[in-house]
Structures are given as C-alpha cells and as structure tokens.
Image (cartoon, rainbow, N blue to C red):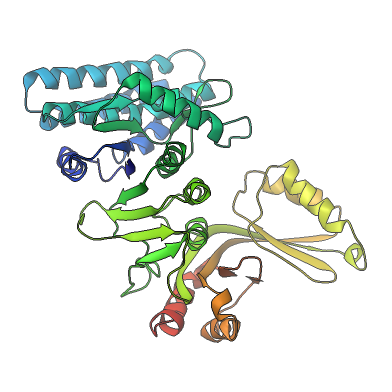
Length: 440
C-alpha cells in the first residue's frame, strides 16, 4: 500500500479536489493524507490570535467570513442536493466548534482545536466527494492514532500500534482518507505537528504501516537544484539520497517538511515528490542510494541569528563549551551551525523567542555579539565521493561574498556558509553559475 499526501494548494478549490480524485482513483489501495484547503490554516491562526487578545467581535466576523467561503465551496463541489446538505452539515459542525471558543477563557487547547478544523473539514468533504463519484472510500481519523510525546516528538510506537488498530476498525476499502498535521499530545489533547506537518504525517504513517512508497504531492515537480525564486533556469533533481534530501529540507527547501525523511529512512521506504499539476512527471525520488557524485543542489534558510562569545576563559580550558550549550538547552533553543577558535565560539539559531535571556546568561562568560538577519546557504551532494578539490570549488565560487561562518565536515553531505541576508540572492546566483551550471 502507498501513502499519498496532498497539500493545501492541491485541495485548495473544488476543481483541484476533483483533479486529486482523478490522480488517486486508479483502483489501487492507498492511504491519502490531506492538508487543510489553502488559506484556511492562516485564517484560523489569525482567528486564534484575535481570541488570545480577547478581540472576540473581530474574531466572530472573521469566523463568519471563513464559514461563508466554505459554504460556497460545498455548493460547487457536490452534484446532488443530498450531498450538498451533508457538506453543509460538516461545515456547520466544524464552525460551531470554532464559535464555541469566542466566549469564556481562551487556552492553548482551544487554539489547537480551532487549528485542527481545517484538516477535519477538508478530509470529510473529500471523502464525501469520492463516495458521490462511486469510489469505495472511508475516513481514517488521525486523532485516533497520531500522537506526540511530552517532548513534542512523534510517538512512533504508539502510531504504529494504533494505526493498525484503526485500519482494522474502519474495515477494508480501496481508498482511505486521513488528516495531516493534526494529532494528540501525551495528555490526550488535540495538538499538531507544526507548519508543514502533513508531510510528516504521511512519513510517520507510511513507516507505521510499512508502506510500499510515500508520495508527497505539491504544486512543484520535485526538488530543484536551486531556488527558482532567485535563480533562473534551475533544474529538477531526479534522485536524492535520504541524507541529501534531509539536508536540503532542513536548510530551507520548502517543498518538504524537514522531519519527513527520518521515519522513511528508518524503514527504508522510498519517498517521491510529485506535482499535482503535472502528474505524468516522475518527480524526485528519495531513497537510501545517492545518484551520481558531486554537488546536487543548494538551499537557503532565512531568519538566522549569529551569536559570538569571546572569552579568555576558553584558552586551554575544558568544559567551557558544555557550559555554553547548557544555556541553549535551558531555553530549548536548537543550534544550527557552530565554529570555534582559541578564544571565541560562534553559533547560529533560528528560534529567537528567548534570545535576550540567552544573551544575558552568555554575558557572564565574556563579550557577546549578536548579528541578526543572516542566511545559511547549504551546498548539498555526495561530497565524500569528490572530497579532493571540493572545498576550493565552493570558495572560488563565493569569491567576493562576505562569509560570516563556515561549517565543513560536520556532515558527509553538505557544506554550509552563513552570509548576510542582503547577500542571499547573489550567493545563490554565484553558486548556480559556478557549481551547478557546469554539470557539477
């Protein structure tokens, strides 16, 4: 059985939903993971923000506008009056839940429940559409098997055990439809896998059922070797290894959620990236094997803050870095890049919620410098197979670019450089012209 995931754009209109139906309705048994219709999650986040601010009147207006838009979708989506009534009932039920939080005290549980309605609506409407068109299709409730633990990490054992159980309870069918993004937490409350989490849902579910293949369908025909928003004539990558894809996803390639690769890699399940608008294209295949050598692609991750700690206490000392890292652990802030010298350590973060608190604690060790608006550029490929001369190719390509930090050797599959965000475009273009356009 395959697991196919379709994002918000793919199910963003009645026409797109029908296009997805044609893609999946090939008679082969599969599980289909759906996101909320495009724009829905943003609207629900905005509504939640208004409720946190106790701006209930404006929130109610926004809720009414979103509900009205869904009523229009239902009218266009279904042919029979009976199914239109069923669709309107689905909408009414979901929005009654949302409206219930416009009075009384608002909480995180309330926000998470509101955010979950997008996926709950899209999957119910799509299942009804499939049934109306004569397809054997059943809804697989994700809230009964998707769970995260106390550390907000996916509870893989729980997911595997309960996915099998729910599949048995729902019973055999050709097409199972389930929700991406949403889950329950360790307390049993509705929660989510964060933005882009539908990809992660598909990978976790695919690993749980030992799927034949996991397919991520978007509006792009796979990984490209550079960012087409900044660089012309980018090329689709036919095949990547799990490690290469993980590096690209983590360091800014928006087509794939950063955590998607890991469950699939553990179970050695191929992941294929496909384009809903061009289903005949093979997309990008991600497997354990790398295809070819040398540099495959580059990606950019924005919103980076660089922190430099200069201290004479580092000289000939041990335990200094441990003390520094303990501060980031205290504030649950991951570190992306790090470089050290005899008297200084530089590192980067992209989570700035506790930046001032972190700086205050680091001030005890020495002089702290903070540089904001930085970008990590990640150059990915089968680097080990082409170690000799690889670094010189990269540095020659970046001649004239002000590089703030370099990370080389931390991974077998990438070299990362930190540049000011204002030099992001020129860096991507320089790499494309000097490393990617000549067959490397």
